[in-house]
Length: 260
Length: 359
Image: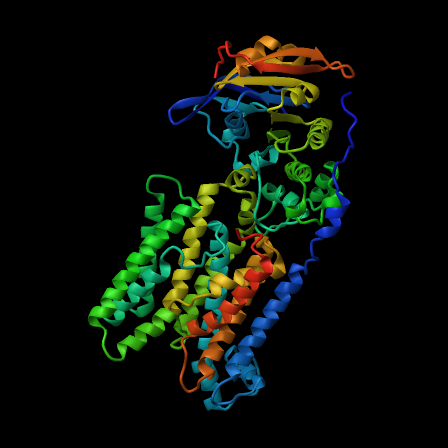
């Protein structure tokens, strides 16, 4: 699916939290959405998901403004996993994944494609978890199941809001490696620049609601940009095994003029 | 490529063994069993009473009235079945089903396990309407006045909850509380100021809930509301389930969050209003049954809603049968029986859940 973010903007309490963002996340790969807290990452994801009507510009999926799509149609094409999604309802893993079939179900709840849930579980290597209680899963397993739920929507575009939050390092790597292997157009908000550098083909850097840089992580994540956007002094090294950029943080740069 | 990680990272065997999800009974079995239970309950409960009838006789009387070719029943017995007991039993069944369904949906909409169908001030509004008829001599049929009172209270609650913002669950609950208290104060005032003699008991029976005065008209009101609104609620089960991970997740699954909540709250209120209009405010059915039934069906509304409606019908019919036979010839308001049965069930559920899902 072609996604075009065209001069899109959103206001919150009179302030532009996303301001004139133009971007085109490449098809079929993982794009990292980076930026400090409050830079507008979550808001931009909600705009792209069509959950928030833009105050300016538009997000086009295959040429159609996403917020103009009918809700069910939109949910079949775009899946959003929000940050820290939890539930007090005692569901099983299969129940959770089956929620992803909501935009396909008839009024009485029947699913025209009964194998879809199993396929999504299998794609996320979560079939062995299918009958487990949701509440008994580890953090990494929960994210994996959430992604299986999103895959059950059979979306062309996958949006993830800080999917590695609160995961241990092994679970973080496993999750992003898995997301990348899906080969689906994916935009993931990430806090960890090194994870973004290691797994994303493309990154978008937001600062105070504006897009300040975009491109392959090796080109974008320079010491100057990190200093500008995050106010942190760093060196960018080359990973000895993968050749990808590794960001070695030094200290908060007191002299830097942070844009936020 | 990058790091050498286990591709899965998926299962921790110790945890997997610790929490196997229980096998679920197929929905068709639950619904089939429920329908059978309702039919048997109706037949048996109509048979029970001071003039003893056989279940076969009851079935024959009903079949005769439905125009089936069966041997007729003695006229007196037929009248007891058709004129006295059957309307009451069917009203109890419909009201029980309606309240249980309303309670289950209300608990989901407000994300509050203690929610019941009366949460938005409906029963207090209906009570005010009822005392207006019983004591102030307003010339309206009692069910009409009660329904009007419930609708007025609902309108007040939703208007208050929506003023200056969107309709969030907590705003709805708080607005309902305010409207309830206001209507309750109004009812108390009217009762205190004007009630005398027998009217006290009449008022009390109404406030505690009773189907003693049920007629075929009550059956019609409760039945039409149940079938009409109940069908819409059942077809909303998928949308209700989509709220399991909150409003944003529901929206991402293609649900119109605001409109769904608003529509379903109004529908639940209409259903409850109709039930209150024929039976007063019967407590505990709508609060306890959703919890008891979800222990059997699991939390998904597609399974919960049809079963909870059937269970509500069975529960209230038996509660009412107890209410009229326990101290015969005196009758208890059925609300007392539902509370007496409901509280221990609630305590058991509370202990079994250990608070995990109810924090």
